[in-house]
Image (cartoon, rainbow, N blue to C red; front, side, top):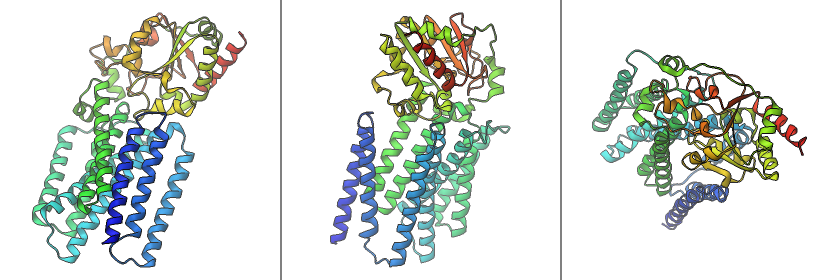
Length: 467
């Protein structure tokens, strides 16, 4: 009884640290400490579960558990330390998938335990098991496909005839299968078939979704993992699992809704629309064409040197080139000369939610200079130079001007209103949405070609010669 009381107190402490940690992560100045506080709470909850377990555990079992934890800790630590910022979305996706897999395997194990003991489980227990099994499996296999799409292994969306109808039928079949398992009691073999069916639906669920929607998909799958973990909390009457699952699930859901709103699209349109399919996008009015102007490094340096206000629009190309540190150096150099510098952040820039914020924070960019879309858009009209580094779809005027464009209606950064527009890209290739960018052909625009890190390094060097 005493150990149970201590365990409950540890779980309560863990739940409180999750809540406070999440709140602190809402502010960049306290985000790191918030993350550490949440991790400390999780560590205490894990140790309490292992060391204060009410049933006797042999030293061999303790060894296996602690060995598995140590192995996972080492692999996770080394992976996180070595991963490049460009690969961060893939890492987030696969880590999220591991959480879904854990929830699914827990449900599978608990169900087979009930079957092996010949017990008749309450309906509420079977509901929690089947919900965790289905949702966790979908999250795992869907996250694996998202990982493959993000790292380029699966570059194009895959669509079959009547794909939406097919996917809906598969989902209905999986849910019906789960309902049958709840009311009939099921068998061990059927539980594995349900597991495989849910995995298959997770694959089919993410297959047709294009690359431009990956931030939304990652957020949605993250909410699935949290929901699956919450059902595990119900199953074990574990308050810390329940709290953590609810926080992850609700945060992922809210973030998904916010990003859909930022793209002016419904969640159903993201899931069923296959946005980002390059050839389809071009056929739907995504190609513009026209004359472009090319700027040399000296042209850009002179323009910026005599500016009063510069706005930088970071995109995925900045992450690919690992140019966040040199762009911070450019910012500091301009500010030394009295130039006001801000960064315009679009909600879905990059390959995961908050990608640009994390990237720039790594280079110690002052978070106060990162301005969200709604706040920065009115300022473009008074901006002397807007420097677009690797961004494409989030500044494409076709979202406002071309009803035939696949991104029509999506709120964008209104960079076209600036007095001068400098666009840094490696080539004229289309962005992740697979459509041409009208901004390239704007009379105020100049293309500053080259790898972002190399081009910005040359720009900084050129500016220093103008001292």
